[in-house]
Image (cartoon, rainbow, N blue to C red):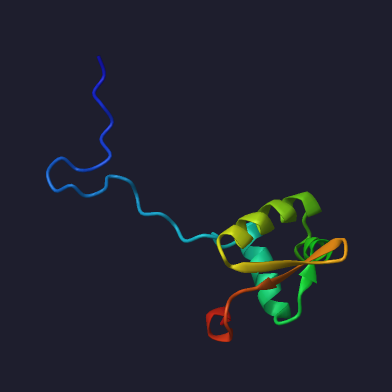
Length: 95
C-alpha cells in the first residue's frame, strides 16, 4: 500500500508545490506574441502579421492568442472575415 500524496504540509498547512512561474514565461511563443503586440501598440495586428513577426506557424500563433485573450492580456475583434488583436496592457505596463 502506498502513502497518499500530500498537497500541503501536515505541520503548517503550507503548500508543498513549487511556486508557479509568471505566465507567459519569457522566451515562449506567447511572450513573443505579447512583445510584438506591445511594440506595435496601439495599432492592431492580424494573425498572419503576428506569425510573420515572431517567425512561427499561424496555427501556433492562433493557439497562443486564444490563451492570451482568455487571460485578458489581449483584445480580439472581427473585421470582416479576419480577426484583429491588440495588447490590453497600458503604456506603463508595457515598459
